[in-house]
Image (cartoon, rainbow, N blue to C red; front, side, top):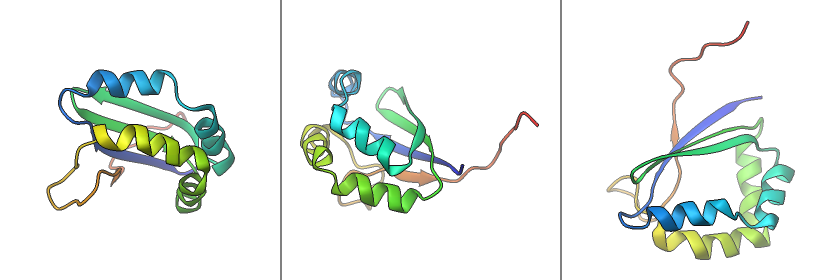
Length: 107
């Protein structure tokens, strides 16, 4: 299973709203994520900085599936207003892929 990491950012002052939404993720969105092939998905928060980790063999196909799911539209309505641009050249909030530079396996 391929590993993927992303960085995101929430707007200052919206941290608690972000946490509240993630304490009650829409059941349809959870289903879409699972059906897409995404596994072991975690999000970590430090202030307004977010780090997401997941495993998926076909991440492009998985995100296409999730984006087309009706629950994602509802989720986007909730989250888009509280998400910040990750970098100044962005025109919309998004997950920025991160490069893996170290890994320690059990083997």
